[in-house]
Amino acid sequence: AVKDRTIYGPLLCLLPPRKIAVLIAHTAFSGAMVGGEEGQKVVSLALQLATTLETEVNVSRALRVRAYERSKRGIKMESMGNLDGADLEEETDAVEIEATP
Image 1: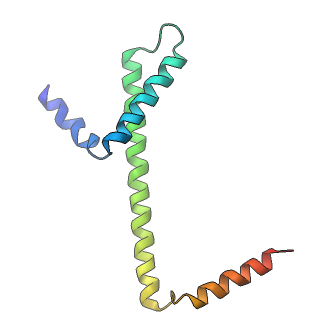
Image 2: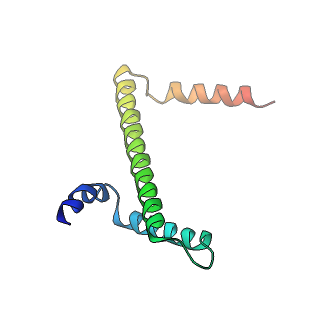
Image 3: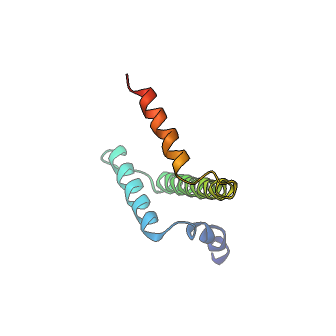
């Protein structure tokens, strides 16, 4: 049994405990609502929960990668001198003027 925990334990550490708790509660509640009077089988609930947690880990990872790329791009633009503020304001004002009929 200890070997099994070494497989899924590190995956559970990738998400904050509060988020895991919310996902478990939401998955269990939605499974109970769909299952009717009998509820949902434990095996199908466990599989649905695993799918939900896996999806959330993938989304969190994608958001972290996206934030890293944006910060990297911001540093690159800053080193090129593109972020002095005045040019950016002029460009946004021009876009707003063009967009208004």
